[in-house]
Amino acid sequence: MGERILLPWLERDDAFDLEAYLRAGGYETARTVLRTMAPADVIAAVERSGLRGKGGAGFPTGRKWAFIPKDAPVKYLVVNGDEAEPCTFKDHRLLERAPHLLLEGMVLAAFAVGIRKAYVYVRREGYLARRRLEQAVAEAYAHGVLGRRIFGTDVDLDVVVHTGAGAYIAGEETALLESLEGRRAMPRARPPYPAVVGLYGQPTVINNVETLCHVPAILRLGPEAYARLGPPALFSVSGHVRRPGLYELPLGTPLRELIFEHAGGLRPGRRFKAAFPGGSSSALLTEAHLDVPLDYEPLRQVGSMLGSASQIVLDDSACIVRVIARTVEFYMEESCGKCTPCREGTVWLAQVFERLLHGRGRMADLDLLQHISDGMTGACFCPLGESVPPSLNASLRHFRHEYEYHIRTGRCDVEERLAAPRVAAS
Amino acid sequence: MPGLSEAARSEIRALGARYEQRQSALLPALFVAQREAGWLPPDVLEAVAEALEVPLSEVAAVASFYRLYFLRPPGRHQLLLCTNLACLLNGADRLRAHLEARLGVRPGETTPDGFFTFRTWECLAWCDHAPMMMVDEERYGPLTPELVDEVLARYRAGAGPAGRPAEPAGRPGSASRAAEPGGGAAQGGG
Image 1 (spheres, rainbow over the protein chains, first blue to last red):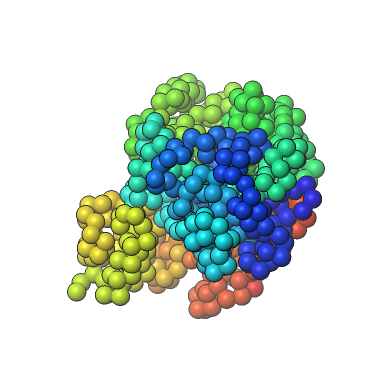
Image 2 (image 1 turned 135 degrees about the vertical axis):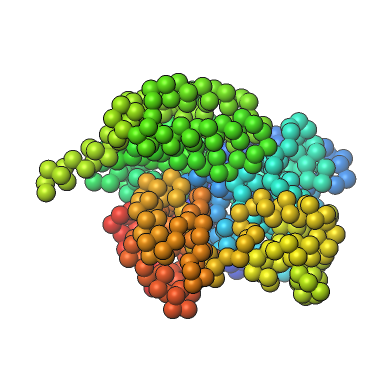
């Protein structure tokens, strides 16, 4: 499949079907590994590959698997397919187009860790994703890829597909466990981590969909050959680009190359203004950051993060105040209400933005925004509330003049500039 | 027996048996109940609690927490307009105004004829087709006012998602066939 690992599966329009998946060599890796490798060697290979969780936190996958107590009689694999980070759509597309690739990754993970029961938690709104996954699970059972004595070995694995009911917070790993246990999706305190006390109080591996989809390739190619590919990552690109979509490129590809070479650049006559490099919870980057490599460490050095690797690109027609107000609104809507800094902070921020956008802002509001943001930083119970300050702070740092214009004039400089030529021409 | 039919109750009990703990089946059980009753009035919540042997307080807590459960009767079709960033950047505000005018209701409301419940929604993960909306289980995008009108007319004519577009096909460099924003052909046009 060349040097790309996931994209070839996404480009096919039949790989969700078992026959097509098998024809393309699907499940061969799992069959070989289950028959010839020791579980510990599978974990070691995944560790050597450098694979890190693709759900946002970026934790090394092999290390996560190694945390699970070997002698625990009951342990679970939970797949987080509740992707709902704004402008992230890779897991959805993988479930829709390559559910067998996920199942193959799950079989390998379960074998490596000694797990016999797995749950896939899929967002309810992903109707096609769930239909395809359920079909794939049924086909896999019929083909002997799931169930008892997989590929004739003594490995067993049962898989249950579970859907959420419309709550972004259910994607946070401990909130997901609560939801899977039939309760409100509210995060649990960590530690203990799910690797020790997870689903039904048992040791649990929680992996993101894309993360597991990388595992078959790691074992097929070998961890070193896989790592030499970049390692590869799927970037969701949306917003003001000519070709929004999914792009598979090596980690470390510069933002400029992703936007201007792969995603077709900006619309005619538009200039780049800013981008979120890791979903709306990552700090906004500006033109000065276009050459930053999209990788964990370089992005941390400029005060941002890779997160779910979803690029939201803004051109000069975007009003930063409006964009940040919208992200604040999102987190306000999705806050579960468990902790005060998130529950109250998001509402308070939204009230200030409401004033700013309606021409009732005051200069003191800029300090107030910073004050609320500082009060939330490091104080929220889970990552949801902590997602608000980075982009807000970055916008105050890089685009303060736009806030000031709104406050001084009661109008939006971007809207005025966009309207100006049309007025002149009429 | 009030609340739910015996068939629904036994479906719910069977769901409970799929999990190590029955309460895990609560989310799917509420969808079974909602499918049968149309929404989740108090007697239906009670029936779910009985069938799963889970306290009513837990059932009510869950039903009121997640957005896809209806605690009031919804319209025949659910219309969710995504207004998150990718859609906002590509004109979701304009489409929201268009939908409000066409439907005569504001987000959160149901049209007087009970045909559509119109809600704005957070990201629906079809960002390469922004701006987009979902009607029941079908996605439409990139939206234009014309495409919105066409989709509304199709549902009103009882055609539902018939003639819906195939799911996006792949193309080199991207796993989407998203037309170029603003200029492309309206997908979802039957």
